[in-house]
Amino acid sequence: MQRIEVSRYQWHTYAMTQPDLNKLNAEQLRALVAQLIGNASTQEMQLQTLQQRNQSIEQRNQHLEAVNAKLSHEVLLLRRLKFGAQSEKISPLQRSLLDDIIEADASAIELEWADLVKDESITNKPKAQPKRVAIPAELPRIKIEHEPENTQCRCGCRLKRIGEDVSEKLDYTPGVFSVEQHIRGKWVCTDCETLTQAPVPAHVIDKGLPTTGLLAHVLVAKYADHLPLYRQEQIFGRAGLPIARSTLADWVGRCGVALQPLADALRQTILSHPVVHADETPVPVLEPGKKKTHRAYIWAYCTTPYADTKAVVYDFAPTRAGEHARRFLEGWQGKLICDDYSGYKASFGQRITEIGCMAHARRKFFELHEASKSTLAATALEHIGRLYEVERQVKALDADQRYALRQQHAKPIADALHTWLIGNRQKVPDGTATAKAIDYSLKRWSALTRYLDDGAVPIDNNQVENQIRPWALGRSNWLFAGSLRSGQRAAAVMSLIQSAKLNGHDPYAYLRDVLARLPTHKASAINELLPNNWQPETVGKM
Image 1 (spheres, rainbow, N blue to C red):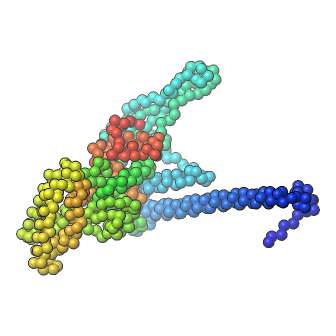
Image 2: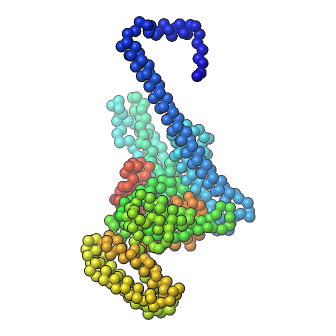
């Protein structure tokens, strides 16, 4: 026990303030004891509160240190790629693409870190702001005036306009640059000298040069038309104003961070449906400091053609491991339409039901017939063709009607095909191409025919395979993804662009409006900006 020493004066002062215990009766003693216990309890509660607050601060600091270490590692990798030894550098064409990715990733990292520490008392030296591109005086100007709603002062006097502030933003329509002049009049009360001025319009890039129209154009050109930024730089140069790739990349990185919450909300929308398509495709990713790429994967998930909501979400992952699918589908229960890839298998069970793809089964027989003109393959194709003919007839019906007609027409065809496959398998030697084609269908027969028992389930996985095609097209233009972060950014933006197309929207009009509304839009109402909920008549220019 720690020894506490006090002076004679301190002890005398303390004793004078305390009651004489010898003069207290039993009730007074009990009251005194209760008071002492209460004081001790209060102090203990205060101590617990302080300990909890201290623990929370320590956890916050540990989280920031972990994130800082992660982001610092990414920055080091980016610097190594950009300023590495000559022996580690890559071809000039790949160099152009990589520089764009480095700039975009760096901008995204800065925004994410700034968001993490915005509530912390961390003082860093402010980053020097890049110089804005000088806008040529000969470009046409479009004046947009912003004036106060009320020109009467609170004191009752009329306000007098004494001047204005003018800010310019660069806009672009294919082949033509123009300039938006935002004019904010200054109004003053001559009596009380109060200055009134309309607020600066919110923008996705604070104090940025581009309008949301120009930002949308850059994003659509990069992620829908698959034009790398160095090509866009050339196109802008021919239009009269070359914009540096580093500037374009900075815009792309910042827009990617701003649009990520929409992609996250789109994922939740898809996982709210009981039937989901899934597929994956390889994407080359550059290995830091090396002259080669490794194979990453884009996983695609979308709603069915029969669902009221039309949406697709891409998930960029460094490998094809099934853990990525399990992470995306975590907590979801329903029917997953997919191919025979083993990465999905661990998810099947009580939560998720496997639905096979009849198109994959048909493809096995089609390839067999193309290679050897097999009559057995032709017969199998004929049976499967009759199943697809039933699907064409029930396509426009509701789920209950579709189920009834499938049971009446498609189920007998499927049963006959199953019996035929079993009978012919016994006649075919093991290991042959014919045996492999038959075995694929027989081993997955239950999964292939589950669509017959649910009118909300399609016969194949073609819906999501069609949504994978933009990535296959883009690979021939942008050659590789420069980093995991750039792949994830591309996945988020392309999810919104492709979902906008599915809902019949012009991706440019959609992104222009969404980027204009995001800075002031409530996070709780983010679903209003999703492509399946977006209203075209709300389009505004900024």
